[in-house]
Length: 290
Image 1 (spheres, rainbow, N blue to C red):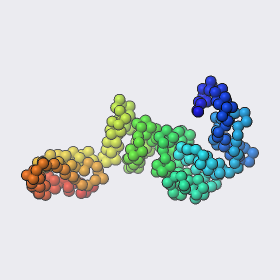
Image 2 (spheres, rainbow, N blue to C red):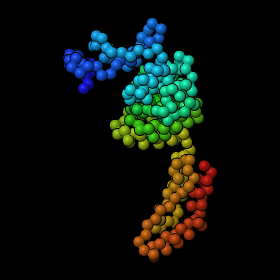
Image 3 (spheres, rainbow, N blue to C red):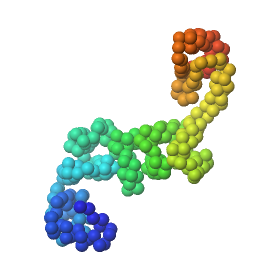
């Protein structure tokens, strides 16, 4: 049974529940010299006169107990890593004692995670977006200011993990090429116009990706327009010719359908003639240079 401690009327209900069923989970406390820090159970302490406690003198053992006893958000685990690092525990010990059997990250990844400057605001956003340690390690070169802007942006349009990776790659490359911060990229007028529009999130995502793509490859729109014009001149009866719109791609593709042998013969003839089509040859020369 769960009670929301922010609702005053539930304090009585919770106390009655504890009297009837007892305290199931003990309060976990880390003791450093004469100071005690409540690691888990701070809300229960507020209304329990004599709570059952587990007091540990090792921060590592305290975190190990916490991770083994319940599901902890990976955003909170990141905070644990930073706290252990602050107390002088090295990455290898953190990995061996705390993370090796629970998370698919390496010792090198732990070093990356410790390069990200902590803030409560960041931790909350990581929690809301369910950011994993594996994903978080990829942002270790970004400043705290950029990360706050970046993840607030992710949260605004509700980006999933795969889209977050694509957007971060584009944003990072644009910021490096234009020698500006990610925050400055996201404050550009074209970006803000889309974010403030009435579009649904999925439409905003598509529009924003196109805009960032144009920032990253400023000449791509002219090239696509040129290739599209050439495509219309290519004689392709019975088949469909697709251009490599992605700037990183340098391959065209064709697709076709047929219902009998005669249809297949026509398609075969069309494909054969394509090898001498000047417009297609020009298209291939352009994308080959990418």
